[in-house]
Length: 249
Image (cartoon, rainbow, N blue to C red; front, side, top):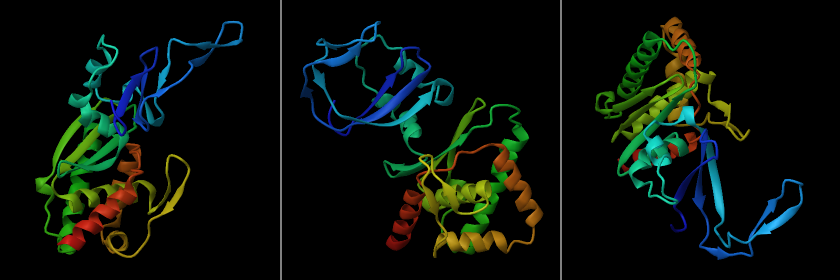
């Protein structure tokens, strides 16, 4: 292991995992302070090597891919997680680029009554809207080139992936708009972000407000909210990637 690597550690009960980034090389320490059953502290000198960590997220077992179970069931003390990187990436980021491919992870938090018609119908409407917006903006990307991976278990995950960064970014921003009614929202850490600026955000807002079929838009917004889709905290990275792509073209 080295600085910058990510590690995955299960809890004692096997009900959740923590994912963190290694922030330092190995340091030698006297030991780890532990508590006795009577509440007194002692130093356990069995552990004398340490690394500083930045813990990024904790995920419950029912919220991540079953493919990770094989990694967690290994009997080795330390195992390589490289073969499971795509599922670990999905725990860390909602939107990211890896090996020239864009990924948008849509976390659906709805636990009960997940209607097939609602899920597939909503995303068909959403993709049609995104395609229309791309044509109006003269962006030469097509929704047809986007692939998907689906793991719906109430809650579940829908992943959109492809080389079409602007198209995937537009879909993610449409979800944010329909989910919260605008581009002002709070991140998981409580930070409030107002994304209404010039550029693609402003044009997307005008696109929605100018549509004649507002009933269809409000119905789609209700469906998206019903799915309890988690907002992408990586929205700033999404905007930066779109702006960078547009500047390079």
